[in-house]
Amino acid sequence: MSETGQKIERAARHHALPQIGTAGQARIESATALLIGLGGIGCAAASYLASSGVGQILLCDFDTVDETNLGRQTLYGPADVGKLKVARAASRLAEMNPDVRLTEIPDRLSDDALAEAVARADVVLDGCDNFATRFQVNDACVNEKRVLVSGAAIRFEGQLAVFGPDYEQSACYRCLYQDADESLDNCSGNGVLAAVPGVIGTMMAVEALKVLSGIPTGSPALNLYDAMTGDWQKVRIKKRESCPACQPVG
Image (cartoon, rainbow, N blue to C red):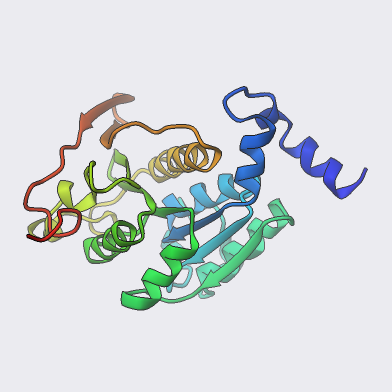
């Protein structure tokens, strides 16, 4: 079978979906996704982006693999401990789908470097574990008018939201959280059920693939997952008048 035939066979179930079809899959295969953070959320999201045939994935994480990561960060194994996450993730993703172009960014991006990376992408997925980075990623997405898919997980809880690209009319991440929220919990200090980041990362991949294939995502909403009950709740996010990121000055 030719290389083209193999790609068509791989994406056969996407081609069969009337909401995606040949045209939508072609958009996915020509798109670029930027993934911030390769922890439990990022590993799940990256796996489905790669297996779905996203043309290029920019992998951004400055960290190395730790023993405590192995229970939930499914792209790594015991032999990867101490190695850069971006390098090990890229290696595993290339095995999943050799057609995907993978770019390793082993840095904590900020300012111009972050803006440049965001500008290269058609969609940005943020699964990092700190508010400072999340705010910077949001601001870059607002400035570059890029869709931001944001996810987080802690204990038995997860959350997911999609923002943009029309930030003049709709809310951004800073409309939901403010600088005062930086003291909120993180999973390293409080723990997290291993599969919960996988649930959120998979849902982030769903939303990103919808964006890339041209399926509307609707107005911004915070989707809350409770693993103890199995329930999802949706809370609409309103644009904040005093938001320093998406409200025009003056």
